[in-house]
Image (cartoon, rainbow, N blue to C red; front, side):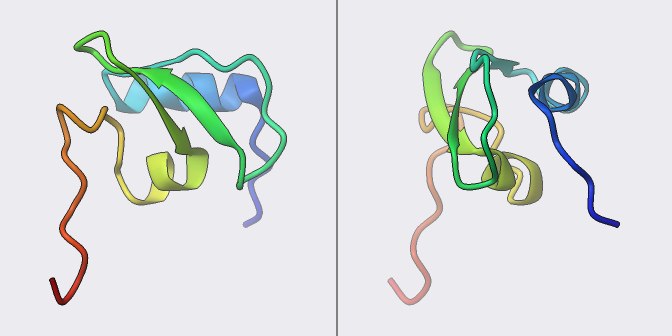
Length: 71
């Protein structure tokens, strides 16, 4: 099923599935970075794909980036 995401649907998803808050006001597609605010107060940018599919729903302080494979 091809789900068409709007900024309102993304805001709703964010509220239900994370402690972060969506700060961006517009959504133009899956490659656009959106601005979020973590529960700790830090602001961070992620594409919605990474936020949604890769479970990267916190800032880099609260959820440090994973080590690259083979490192």
